[in-house]
Length: 172
Image (cartoon, rainbow, N blue to C red; front, side, top):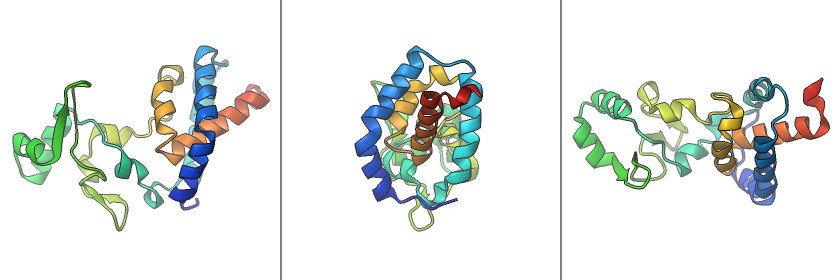
């Protein structure tokens, strides 16, 4: 497993993002047979190469959505009321109807270690991120299209999928 160089990652994204998003759109419109099985296999390979603690770009540049259960669990863990927790750390996005972090990077990210200070009780959105093989792939393309710009694991997953699908190796 190799440490992630965010500067290099961002350069790759700038150069390849449009093509990878176009590939995902084509995949969404015309999914190959056993796409979900392929996704699971690619997911395994990606995590053998990806060290999230050397990156934490998601925590530095994105905000999870907080469910009512997340807010209750985390506020209890921190010894405060849900109301106080929301007032201190979150804002309500009226358009999407989501509770989000007021600041970036995430207030719970330790910037020296890239570790989450509330890992055991973190939001469900964080626990599932980057959602590579969590759901039926074809129904989750919009998330992958967004996340390739923020998450090296998602970027690698799409890169590997593109190689396998375009070469036909996924059929073997």
